[in-house]
Length: 157
Image (cartoon, rainbow, N blue to C red; front, side, top):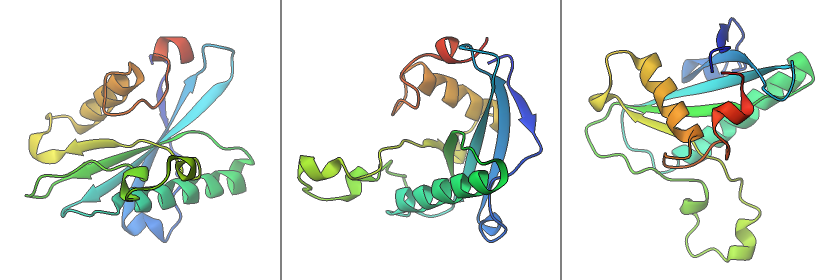
């Protein structure tokens, strides 16, 4: 992850910038000399929202559509949900919102994870906290696995 550098790009539409922001990074893939862009989608929540996973999915789709319009290619978008409410947040995937759904139908539900961070229990440096959580997920030790291989297998370290 030593080749990680922040870019001035954004993939969020003007309409979505009122409620969400993103940070775009570039890093070199270990498999070649190509640069990979990774966009961190930051969503702030001050109250519990059962359907946040649906909102995050819409942001991911909007981000990919904007990437296609700008670059004619897409790159990964890593959603980060920052929560600063009083009640305990319950992490939900999109699939978990469907009650008693037949396993065969789950194949048609988009499967993605997002990083959840409770600002009530935050480290002093938010960017460091998020990067630590991403590295934790890459290692396969987190709530979900974003990439099923550690970063050393994907990115030049």
